[in-house]
Each structure stands twice: as C-alpha cells, then as structure tokens.
Image 1 (cartoon, helix red, strand yellow):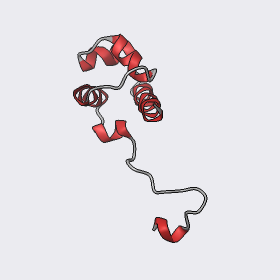
Image 2 (tube, one colour):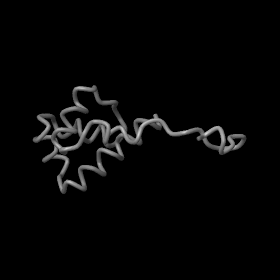
Image 3 (cartoon, one colour):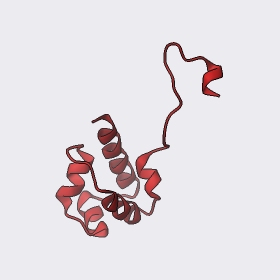
Length: 84
C-alpha cells in the first residue's frame, strides 16, 4: 500500500510540474480521467503499460514515475559501513 501511495504522489507531482490537469493527462495518455484519479489516489495499481503511457504523456522516463529505486538500509543497527 505504501508503494502505491508513493507512486500516486509521484504521478500527481509530475503532472503538476507539467501544468496538466488530470483530464489533460488522461487525454494525452489515451486513458480515462478516472484511471488517473485512481492511480493518484492510491486506489489502484497501474499496469506497466499504463505507466508507460503516463510517462510518455508527461515526457519523463518510466523510472521517474517509480522514483529513485531501492533505498539503502537505514534505521537502528545499520552502521555507515553497511551502507557504503
């Protein structure tokens, strides 16, 4: 669920940067507005094909939607030497 929320926030953030409404993004991606709403609202996981369409419409790489990838371990008991 946390991954879904992060993805939804990322899609919304990139959409806002592109100065697009949900309706405009949906049109550019060839999707319905409610699909964009569901993805941004973390109510549904997009298929990879939809991520590609959204990324193309936003003129970003699909990895930009997914974030920076796996994060190094952090928290109690993780020393600096284990993260480098």
